[in-house]
Image (cartoon, rainbow, N blue to C red):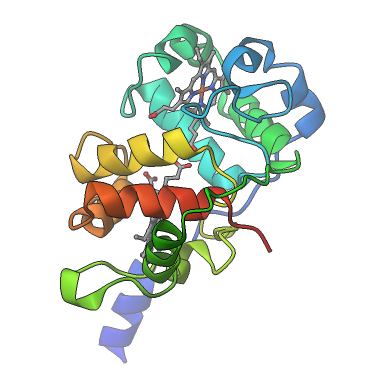
Length: 205
Ligand code: HEC
Ligand code: HEC
């Protein structure tokens, strides 16, 4: 009984979800449209879509950029701006993009690439130490809003490739969750990454 009580004391309850205000967020994103578009659809294949991404994930990533834990040359242009924003402002920005409709991409019609991408995404490859992606990102790639696991469906292909390589090399290492993805991507080949990016880009329900 005593042991049980001391155990329950250590249980950390998940942070209460606080919904941001998308209308307020809309007034704070003028500097972002040049790359992420007016409605959160990246203007280049190399720049991520933010539209329809879950608020929790967007909020956390913006906090990582603000604190310098996640670094990217292009995002550097808005760091000074992010630094003057409050947590509430950042939550409102995250809510603004989460509210937008996500993109549906089209996968390249290369049968071999599609079969590899689909197999790895849904089932992983146990022998090569690759877990299934659908376990956390869901079968249609919507992610998990409550847990803050990001959506990957319709995401820009160039960005998917570069960010998976950045996890694999350990360069993307902001926060505990990035360690999960470092382990996930450790055994992926460049070909696996191309196949997965092609599959996720074209994924929708
Ligand atoms: C000059 C181009 C540029 C501008 C301006 C810009 N971004 Fe970005 N943003 C990027 C790129 C490129 C990445 C991908 C970074 C990486 O690969 O790590 C990114 C990543 C992000 C991410 C993480 C996305 C993910 O899926 O993990 C968020 C959130 C984000 N930007 C929000 C913003 C906000 C909010 C603004 C405006 C205050 C902004 N960005 C302005 C280029 C830009
Ligand atoms: C155990 C759960 C889990 C598994 C399995 C998993 N992921 Fe992830 N994934 C996450 C989490 C959590 C994050 C956010 C990491 C962070 O904060 O950097 C993430 C982030 C990502 C991102 C970055 C999204 C963005 O917008 O920047 C991509 C791409 C991705 N995962 C692809 C995959 C692929 C491909 C697989 C399968 C080979 C996979 N994941 C397996 C949990 C998982």
